[in-house]
Amino acid sequence: MPNGAQALMKTLVDAGIEVCFTNPGTSEMHFVAALDSEPNMKAVLALFEGVATGAADGYARMADKPAATLLHLGCGLGNGLANLHNARKGKVPVVNIVGDHATYHVPYDAQLQSDIETVARNVSPGFVRTSQKTEALCQDAADAITAARGFPGQVATLILPADVSWGEGGVPCVVPPQPAAPLADDATVQAIADAIRSGKKTAFLLGGRALREQSLLAAAKIAANNGVKLFAETFPTRIERGEGLPAVERIAYFAELAGVQLADVESLILVDCKAPVSFFAYPGKKSYLVPDGCTVHTLATPEQDTAGSLNKLATALGAAAASPALQAAERPGRPRGKLTAEKVCKAVAHFLPDNAIIVDEAITSGLMLNKMTAGCPRHDMITLTGGAIGQGLPNSVGAAIACPDRPVISLIGDGTAMYTVQALWTMAREQLNVTSIIFNNASYSVLNIELERVGADEVGAKAKSQLDLNGPVLNFAQLATGMGVHGIRVHTAEEMNKALEYALAHPGPHLIEAVVPESLNGVKRKVLPWVLRSLPSLPLSVTRALKKKIAP
Image (cartoon, rainbow, N blue to C red):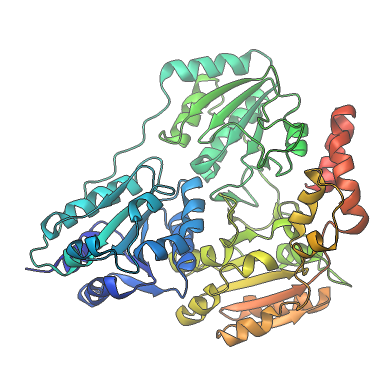
């Protein structure tokens, strides 16, 4: 009979889990050895646990099924926690396997002993289990897989003691098929149809799976037929966009601008998302961003079928045959002159290939990315769902492995890139078709803005030094070269164009380091908090014009 690790490997593969992102240690050696027993399992080594967990997240977003991770004890889980947090917030399925000491070794409190279950519950509130016996391991794994790929998706953590892994008598288990997600019930659909017909200003707020093509088309039919506005959550897990798809306006990161977008909405209909809230609390400002007097309805929860529920609503409204408004083809021209973050986004939009995957962790440098790429050839975009920076490069690894025939372009801030820069090594090792564009503005730019917004007084040199990346300025092209990735540093728009054309014409990985000034610096940074504070006192038409200027 196989040992526990071998039986576990077969259980995973038979359930359709074909990739494992690993950063193993001694306790996981039998699992590592079992990789050779299963030719259908691809193992991808990461040099840091945050790369492994972020890659599993990116993979599942694009493959629509979970990958596995392999982490070393509680400390390894802790190192990977931030990107598991992002996966949890994005409702992304991940089977998170964490090795542990042998069960009989635990009472001795060895150096690496820790309470793994407590750590795991932060990112796996719905499923954490320590397998206690080899004979029960594969059933535990089947339960974890079932939990991970249910509706909504989740991070399911299976803790694997070393002796359970090496023990004889493992028995592979069959994982039951995933049941279909239910539709919104008749009463809910009728109530929302009545709200839309009431004549009140109504908007959809779409999130999760509602930002895929079939759901978008159904929502856009209702919008065309009944005058409903389409909004998307601020940080979508994955949004399908571009030429030939409905255009959706994302809710702004700045709460003051989100308030402008929602100001006149009287009925807000949620589809696979929650009502919008401010990213952080600010003195004297609201956290809950739904306007006073606005009624919130939920058409489909994360447990329900978004496309089916929207189509059901469209039928109830007589909108099933309506013609949805679709994004026309449109690209900006080549940028020229001194390089800025906006011109980098313009270059990406000008050269974006068909069926690309954009991974957006550009932070403030990407303020113009949505506008620039709106009419580009159809593409997917992945964003920072949980706000824990360091997601973008690992997500790119996972997306490229899930979709090897699609080019991946990641736009990453310099500060966030350093959180998981080891992902470049994995890109080189796996020869992934990823072009990473790093915005080097030598600053935690968003924190400089937040410093002004929170009303901190008398900010001196010591405080400001915590928010800049000068002294020394990072050289990402050299870092990339040191990890086997073709890297180049650019200072002008013409150099950016040439570097991006080359990268897209030659399979990756590539890294382009764009040396740019901060998007919101100097006078802009000083003026922005004043403008945001002034918005409630200005006419709505003026505030919306300002919003389009600041963050279109």
